[in-house]
Structures are given as C-alpha cells and as structure tokens.
Length: 209
Image (cartoon, rainbow, N blue to C red):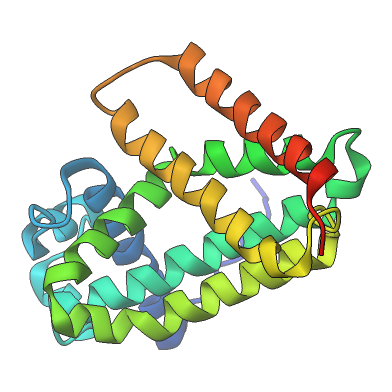
C-alpha cells in the first residue's frame, strides 16, 4: 500500500509559544474581570481559565499587576480598532449621528468594556495601577476623539463642543450599561438613545459659534 505521508507541522518558535501563552492569559483576564470583577480575578482564577499553571503565568509577567496593565493595553487596542472601523464606514449610513450613537451605546455593554470599566474603578483606589494605565487611557481617548473629528459627524456643532459632546454621550451610555446589570429596561435604553440623538439635533440647529 502506498500513500503520501503527512507533512509535519513546523514547530513553533519560542517567541510564537510565548505570544500564544500571553494571548491566553490576556483573554482569560478579560473574561474573568468582566464576569467576576477585578478583585476576584486572582492569579489562580486567570490561570484556571487560561488552562495554564501559575508558574507559566509568572514566566511571562512579574506580577498580577503587570498582567492587568498589559490586559488594559490590549482592551484599548481592540476597542480602538473596532471604533475606527465603524467610524471609517460612517458615511455609508443614512443617519451617521444615529449610527455612531447606537454603536457607542452598544459598545458599553460589551464584556470587554465591562472589564475595562472594572479596571478604571480599581484604579481610583490603586495609585500604582492608576499611574501605569494613565498614558494608555489618555492616548486611547485622544485617538477616539481624533477619529470622531475625522468623520465630520459632529461638524454641525461648534468646534469647542465636539469633544464634550462625545464624552457626554459616552458617560450617559456607560452609566446606563452599569445600571442595566440590575435594572433591565430595554425599551428605556432605546428611548434614552432616541432622546440623546434628538437633543443633539435640536441643539445643532440653534448652536452658534
């Protein structure tokens, strides 16, 4: 009997194996923080979810804090990438402002966003965490604001108001997502979205430089 032998899969390099381990740890950290909260996301919880030993984690990161900081950086990168894609195609929609607001609202209920929000809350009382994630967070919001400005979706508003408008909507929808965890009112969420859009359109018609 003849047959062709299977081509052996090339062995992964040490760098590739390390990258795969780090990715597992980060994904497990995001999932854990989003589901059980920052404080209960222990090293053991993370490693259990990642299917790795505690030793494997400490071969990649010197501490839990280092892993949390790296996770925050990854969350920001993922969210920025998703946001940029939506902003790039905003002009294809009949109502760009409505589309942007709906995306912003829905993004606040994503598990990844919940994880980032938990990290923000922890940073309020953890000075070292706050200092270490501050540059990433600052760059994140600067890039988001620049992406919004580039689309022109807020061009109907005075320049001085465009960034505040973005953060106002972000904070409304972020607070809404937190409350939604214990107070389920989907119809109210939709009404809030409509109200924010209507208020902005009405204001745009009357605002002056």
